[in-house]
Image (cartoon, rainbow, N blue to C red; front, side, top):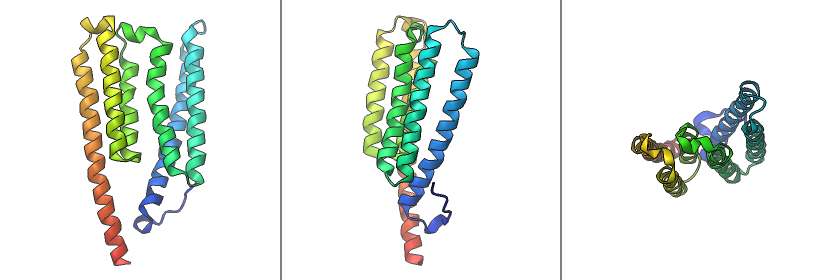
Length: 189
């Protein structure tokens, strides 16, 4: 899908579709590796093992659907499906594994990926709304978690907030630069 490598003469939409293609390939491969690690290293008697495996398989299916949609020209739907999948994953892990609320907040750090992906693939307004919703949700979890007394939740929230803001700013600058480059390339042609 999208193997054309015309470089700067490609339209911005074609470059975005190509970028999404590579991101989806990477995410699918990473998810398959995560599935194998889950199946090999989680104890067979662990009830969360099968739930995590089902979650990962479901995500791979969503990523594959997004990949196909992108290949046939539905970039926006594909990008939204990828970002929504990235939103679902950490929140689903919270439902699967209650120990997260006991202080193992590492799975919740993956919230940042949905914001990063959104900042790369979708308009800034969408990313801002997503970042706010994710941050509020994360704040609510940390406020109502019994482990907040033993966990540096302020630092964790600061990490998510700063990562979100930096990714949104970076993407805004890159989008303006790419638009200017496309305009200059068009003028040169």
